[in-house]
Image (cartoon, rainbow, N blue to C red; front, side, top):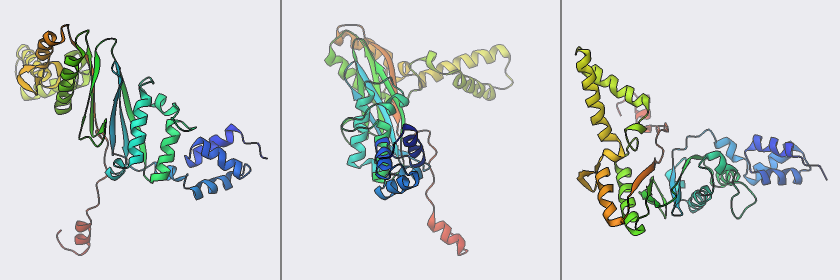
Length: 309
């Protein structure tokens, strides 16, 4: 019997993107013959993943998972929305989000974690799923929020299943107050975040590049004004900008006559204790991914025929 080394398994994995256990089995079946092992995996349909890795995966699902004081949000992408409705894919995303609860909030940590019910990691299980379903899929991003007291509220928009949808939100409320009141408040704020997509919790969280860009726009709009006037214009303009894009200063979508900060203050009477909004995370499926445009076959045929589409 051939001596199957870790280096051989690693080489086969890098060549085929098949799972570790599948590579080990292939080498064992072929007595360590690398080329024969590659063919063995191809026949089993387990080496497809490498061929699909270059395809744009901008569909998929966002999952949220909470255990009260801890919650995670995860985006897993696929090539088509059809796969996002696949039971196997949904089961994988849901399980991966649960696994992430015990992780450190990084994709690397999640990929290396053991996948329940198998002898593989989360990364290997995804490769097996790619080979089975036939589409490229990626673990794109994950985040984790924790509070020592209070709760992490969750919300999913355009839900396709429990905790699965197109937009996911986590909201961390820190308080020793009534849990029922916090749950209601947290869900309302999470819905607000889904609708308004704030860039930060407050002005201190807005990155410097964004502030400089907004300042430059204000300078261009008011070119020619004296320096002391320009400074006041920029300060006033940024103040208005922060009210629009920072969560605590935004008008509350459920009652626009109040800001989120005011709503939090009023909620303290129902909760019976001070309530602090410590953090939030919002994932919208596919945001920031450059999607390939579907071919316009009608226009293409018309152009070849010398006609207008």
